[in-house]
Image (tube, rainbow over all chains, first blue to last red; front, side, top):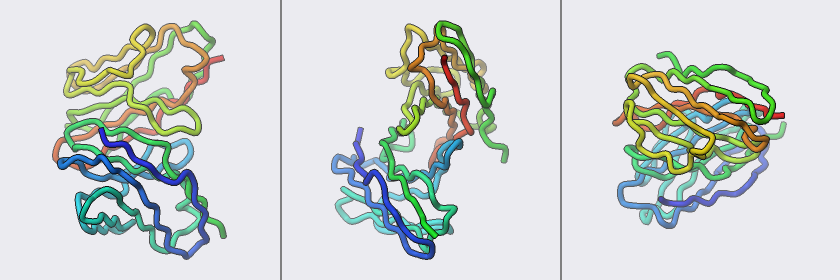
Amino acid sequence: LAKTTQPISMDSYEGQEVNITCSHNNIATNDYITWYQQFPSQGPRFIIQGYKTKVTNEVASLFIPADRKSSTLSLPRVSLSDTAVYYCLVGDNFNKFYFGSGTKLNVKP
Amino acid sequence: EAGVAQSPRYKIIEKRQSVAFWCNPISGHATLYWYQQILGQGPKLLIQFQNNGVVDDSQLPKDRFSAERLKGVDSTLKIQPAKLEDSAVYLCASSSQGIYGYTFGSGTRLTVV
């Protein structure tokens, strides 16, 4: 199973763009890259998933280089409500995913 | 679409007592997972069900933890006897093949004193 490495924490200010990078050097051919967001006292919430290049939805963008050994979650114009822990996972959609320790994003006013 | 339901929301028990958690997944989701999340850590997979069969329980402490999923729908996770280190949030998640990502419930916060 591919292991992921993310920064432990990041600080940002309201209105800024935040980029969180995840390393997954051992990603397998069939693996997808999935990001989750978790607020205190809640279960993780699916944000975005991709396989290669760029994926965008109403919440975030996910950038994946050609070698797929890393990925970057981009949150445009963050607000205080984006303060949360963000997890990067890699895995096949038909198998289990393992969570790392995540990146704690702190958005300041 | 209704989410993943879990109960109870909170539970406080003394060590060596037993406790059970219940999970009702999203209708039609064949795969169900139980995770343990200790404060400050990411969720740790305990067990994965596909319909009512166990796919992976390699990280489940089988001497004290047990789980079942009757009729491939609801699931219960039991701890007997509980230890202090079992204090954590127990998260249930479900997914459907072909639909990316899991949907998590809000979890049960267990405190063992």
